[in-house]
Structure formats: structure tokens, C-alpha cells
Image (cartoon, rainbow, N blue to C red):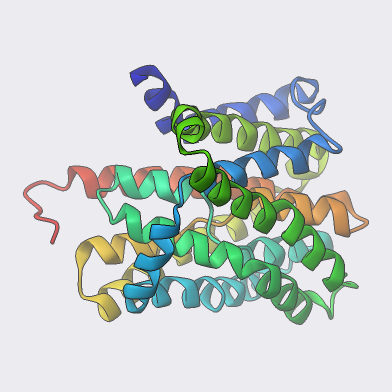
Length: 310
């Protein structure tokens, strides 16, 4: 069991390693494509749903004032940053749309792991991820169409249906599975995070391998834009959390939740709804950066000498 936890906590390393290998030898990962990608994301979201119980939703209703800042920032700050950075860096249309799309996605499930490592409020992180994920069916298509509609035709209906299919339904199924089959869920749950790590690693490496030439040609502009998106999310999320919630642990949690997007969802939505395969590339790169930045932030907060976390 300790080995499973260690392997799971090392997910940023696996994502980075697989991405580098995909650039060197795309064939190692490009086999993971087509229907395997939405299936992989569905498994990730099912795993997330199994970590949530109906009691969590009762807690959400009781502590909604703590949850609201992170969810609001997720769908205001991040989309605004995505659109601004796509414009400032003058990204080609497919990359600009991809950056905007991933900025409009809900919080990533990896944020819950990072919150644990950072000694943040894991329960609050799970609650914010759950709420932002459930309302993604409405917010992600609406915001993407609003911000990217002038650049390319955005199939809002397709985005809505796909979000429901690969995110909302698996999460709800996971919640129901945990409630109806608690014994079976308890046996599966310890392995679910590692399965999710493997799935997101394969998704990211597959997209980067498939778009190897375009990734290498995009160069500094695309990399800088994606990096700035997540740095901005972590920084402004922390400042807002500290201002609004006045607790260090809560501020860390908001920072992590806002700074880490569900990049896997962005990949699936990009591949299934846009003609250009390049739209998925910023989403894949996003997964690499938010994982690394989240791990760095967690290490700093965890090891900050003499700090007492309220």
C-alpha cells in the first residue's frame, strides 16, 4: 500500500517523464488515442466520484462561504487569464482556442493530492473540485463560446454533451457506487488514485506525441503562455483566498484549486469538438505545468520552516 501511495504522489514526475519520452519517441504513447482518451478521463472522474460521499455535499452546504471563492475564481480569473494571455502572446488560432478552453475547465482532480501534500484543507479541496466539476457542463461551454467564439466556431452544444458524458455522469456514478456498494468501493478506492495517475499520464503523453512537430515548432510563446496561466492561477488564487478567508490553509487550498485545471477534460473536449488537432496541445502542456507548479508549491508550503498552519 505504501508503494501505491508513493507512486501516486510522484504523478508530476510521471507526467513530465512521459511527455519528454513522447517528444523523443511518439510511438510509445500515440497508441493511446481515439475512444481510449474519453474512456481514460471517465475512469479518472469515476475515481473522483468514489472519494465523495453524500455527507460531503452536506458539508458543502454548511461551509459554502469557504467554497464560493475558489469556484468563482475558477470561472472568472482563469478564463480571463486564458483570453488575455492568448491575445498578449499572439498565439495562432488553434493554440489560442486551446488555451482558452483549458482555462474554462473545472479544477483538476490532482489538486486534491497536491492539497494533501501542501498540508492544505483536503476536504475543502475535494468540495471545490466537486462543485466546479458538476457546474462545468454549463460553464465550460458557455465561457469557451463567449471568449473564443470570435476566433473559431465553438460547438457549445457538443461541449455541453461531452462534458456531461465524460465528467458529470462518471462522478455521479462514483458517488452512487460508494453509497450503494461501500464494501466494494472501500476495496477499490486505495487503487483508484494510481489508476487515475496512469490514465492522465497516458492522455497527456499521447496528445504531445501526436502533435510533436507542432509542439516543437510552437516554441517559447506557447510554453510561456501556458506557464503564465498557471502561475497566475496559483498566485491570484492564494492572494484572494488569504484576503477572503483569512486562513493560511484555506488560502493554500484556493490557490491550488484555481491554479490546477482539469486538463484531461480539455484534451477530450478539444479532440471531439474542434477540427484542428492542435487545439488539444495547450491542454496537454497545461497538465505538465500545473502538476510541476503544484508540486513545487506543495514542497515550499510543507517545508516552510517554523510555520504554523492555522
